[in-house]
Length: 549
Ligand code: PEP
Ligand code: MG
Picture 1 (cartoon, protein in one colour):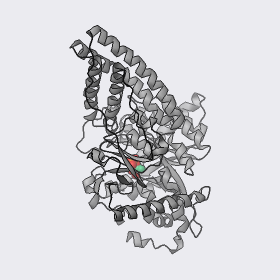
Picture 2 (cartoon, rainbow, N blue to C red):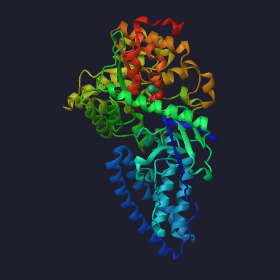
Picture 3 (cartoon, rainbow, N blue to C red):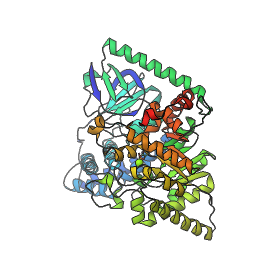
């Protein structure tokens, strides 16, 4: 029995046969012609690769949806990238064969990505390799090997390329394990979309002799166990049966209200990264979207996304929700979410630095453009804006003034929008929580960003995994701040939600409901477990002091 540990990207238990997928890293060697002939081979391969990517895009669109499919348009762009082309041609001119040149150029470019600060960009290294492999495959006349699955399996590899993932027979995949990779990799995104228990970044490779052995993926703890002993296997099979039965049982809760035993209703919304995720929110019976992290649009772009691009994205989400509330969080770039075109200066302490609304106050045109897009989308559904990282009433007033200017401009231009669109704020700094009485007069609603509220209250960098053992998310300092913010919101007749990870912590559901939290926003798969929990609590019997004193 061998154990590995990594990052869980979807909670659940998978038990099945392990299939190890190895990538052939041998450099391509082939019969070589003159540089002129090699150049021709490169260009012919490039044309075929782009056309194959177009059909992969269509295949992905039909099977897993637009956001997963987009990766193939990106790959087509990368295939035709001028830097890659120059590097390949230089290698051909230096005497290399076209296939070797393509692979080497791809590898070198991937190293540039690996060294980038931005986590999203680092994760793109595997895409460059994928692109280069496809090119060399065409030059060599090799067909890309598909991962063939004869039976349901848990797939393990260093990482999976997006084209491998999209071609998989999804009905035979039980889960993924990767040596590298991040939570933003396409394997992770797919795992969450398909609700597959998966663990990435185990930082170790699973040895080939383990191929075909029984494997357990514990997506609750990030543990992967290969060749378990009988006792462990039967323990996990029991756990899996319980998890499956609970999931089945919860289907009956679809369409029901989330009301405590003594009649207090708490709305359950979803956190999403883009408009495509809204479909998962609706499938899981989310009553709305409590947090659309708009910065993902910025992170995926090479330059500031235009008003039109943003509008299209927000409007699509609003329309999919058909009148259910869509809370669009204004961009939260900075700290761990860096986009290179912002050219933010290097900071010793980025989590305590230039981030979100602070950047906007320095560069107001960013917020102006975003608010125009959000207001325009408000004509297409039930939309609200929410501003992160607030620490003062002055910031909220500044945002409101900007919103007033946007409304006046849109009116002048004859563009429709919802005059009454709510503007809420995130309570994710201790400062905001402690002046919640003042802020409740300025904002239309609050949403607790517990991820940051915990990091700032407990002075513990949320990115630093070695601090985990020192960080107690139930620390009474954190819970007192939440309780106080809820009191202040209600004293001004405003509603309050929680959209950080704490919202799905079932051991706090009773606390939240008893505090009067009106809305909990969680990743789509957590809606029904949370509803089940809410139905079982009784707030009139809850002793809040037990949590905060
Ligand atoms: C939070 O801080 O809890 C939050 C929801 O925002 P993010 O995790 O995106 O910082
Ligand atoms: Mg936050």
